[in-house]
Length: 121
Image (cartoon, rainbow, N blue to C red; front, side, top):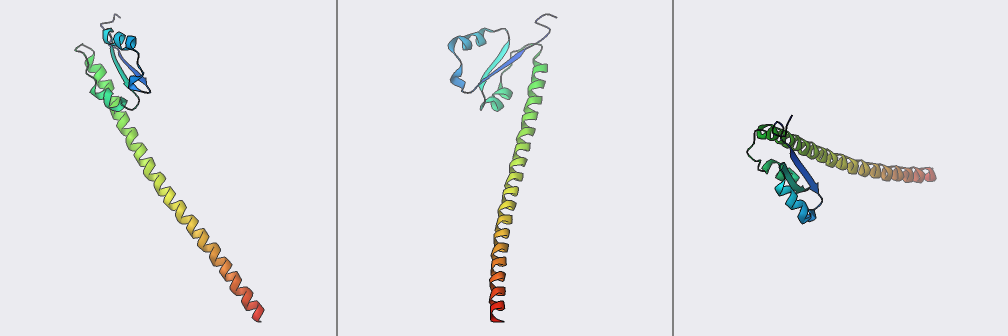
């Protein structure tokens, strides 16, 4: 299999987009491979917007990018659902704490009343 039978898309991710050195940027531009240099925050938008060179493998690469994009969308939906669930659990937890406090106050009040009744008998 020669290099024309297979297309390669390299994705290099750094913490900050400015984290690449000049020589790294130059090598990426001159590389025979398609290389995306990005940072972690920009990856979700940079990957689907990456302009592929016109080669025979673009359809395969584009399908993979579309699959990754779909997977990332699903992950965002899952995270959103988890955050919503977490908020509901937090609300329930606050409600239960308040209920326990009210019950403790009620028990103390009933105990106080019973002790007053016992003293008066």
